[in-house]
Length: 362
Image 1: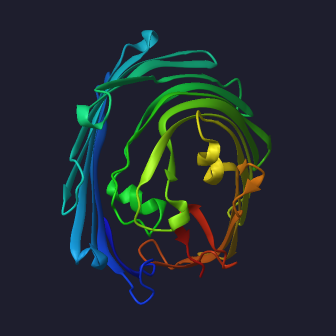
Image 2: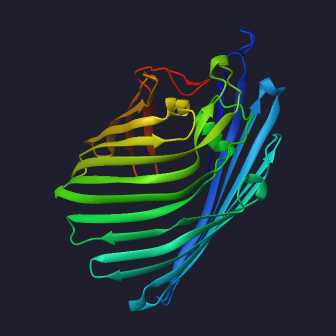
Image 3: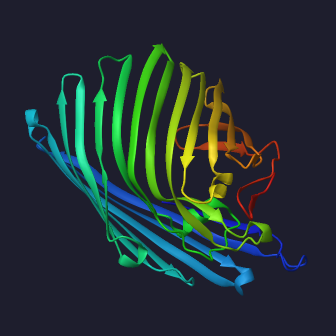
């Protein structure tokens, strides 16, 4: 169980420079689960997670908004020995709202799979069957849940993955898009009908690993756009767009004992949308992360990270590149007590990931 209380100054009202809006609220997360096996023939797990997001918005006449998100899942697997393992996963999501004009939401998902191994190959074949209320889109949606892994040695492995599924956009995820979200519009859930990915992992030497991958993804309601950019009004809604994307990624990481670790990774995206390509203005074309962690003394670690995002160029123009540099320290006195200090956006960059939703500097 964990929770947080937050309070911050909202942007000035675009219609009056003398009006400020303060927001405050609470976030709460709780989860519980169990897993195990029975006589080595059956394996099972069950879990439940609850997320609460509440907010007081003073510009809305001190209205209180809240959403509860309950996610539950359970699975049962039966081992047929040389014939493989048959499994069934059932999961559900329930969203309940108060004080806000959002529709309550219920979805149910069923994923049957069959796993089989032969020498260096491991196969998983299955499908995702997702159900939801008619008011939120198609009643039934389907996507694959398949994977083929080839592991000839400890030095190399390769995977072919065909999967998909639904991504729930809750009130909390709206807040995650930008802290200046004013909850005037309920986001439509995204659904990936196909994510085909081929990836490989190579251990170059002791402590040095390389990952290469690429694929093609088809998703409904994949991209978000603020249609009132010129007004710069921060409480407008976001519209959604379907998209297809071909992507490639690479990651290399090095670890020396428990003293030093370093990682560099990047992803390149080639987006394909129908209609107006302006939606790609704030869609990442290249996304990279660089990070290092060093142990100074026993229990004390210093880490630094840099997040780099370059957006797509539309009509010869490109949004300002995001460079978010962070620095922090973590000290563990023992197994029960630890301290940390983190600083983010140390370059004091100002940028907008979504029109009208700026990210503040330090």
